[in-house]
Image (cartoon, rainbow, N blue to C red; front, side, top):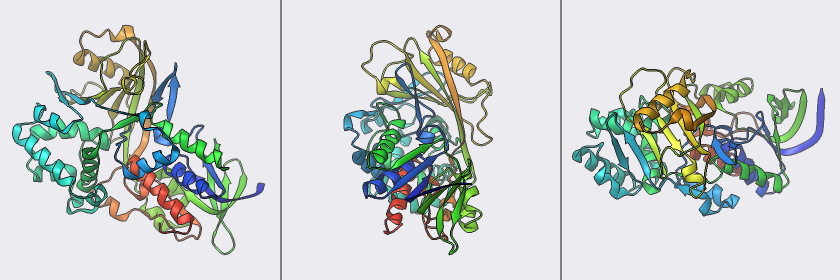
Length: 440
């Protein structure tokens, strides 16, 4: 067995947004930090790769500009405000016969044709209501005990609004078209979105993770890639002593922060703290994203395209398209133009055979004059089997806490909060506070 005699203050398992937030805070506080990541790049579900000088996100996730803890992290990293590009055009919904545009400005609601006048009033009332209290307060409100669809129907929305607006849009945000997410989480996201638009960093969502990793290294910490942890170790007194890696090394630390995705976190926790392991959420949301390089742009403007058509059952359903280079490279001359197409596969798993052909058929309906076969080249597909946990009613009431029963072992990740980038970042900040001796 290879034992590394160095001893870090903190070892963090996982270089997703939770682990990197934790590591950046601890390194900034002068702690010796080592982040271990099984993959060959940081970012987890917010990872970005590059294609001919253009950022390509491996999965399309929503980054709401008013996530409070994420905004704080972005300021700490020094990412300039100009590098957070707004989806200023909002979202465009195709209902099978035409397009309805919901702009980023609140006034655009009055012109949104996918909702009746009465439903537009209901939606405006809901927006005003969630703005009256901090967004985090919505998570624990009385609505948290019902599904989002139940809550919407209780508010008076009927099938036309739910099928024409809420299911197409929020089904992609939740990665679950059943709208089974608890309504407290829905109201939290509504409150956040009502305060400011969604944004995309100029170098893709992975830009935040890359800057965080660079900040850790610049402060003397380490981010080791391609290192899988097989076991968390304890000393004779039962406290954490370090980790064992899959290649047989033993690394020592006073504190270990487990910031892996839920399945891996449960496996590593089980031998040490079965109760915390039991509380790791197991219901998964799944999604597949296909990326394409376009020689000619499919559309103009900083807008996402949402599928509000009835499901035809003809292969995978393309739920969302976004030409991300419209946002990240709006002034660029020439291609490639990067298009991401997402299909939500919850429930049932992340397999989506035939997605490329489904995208071609969808483009033919949405933009009949576009020569897809001539202009589009596939870059690749990314399937997230466990993209996030499903926040069904009651699930968030029984999540594991930051601290465990093992001295020195902390847990981070959206599995301790709520399944969003903000949930991951907030959990990482809480783990850093706990490692520094503050409240979790």
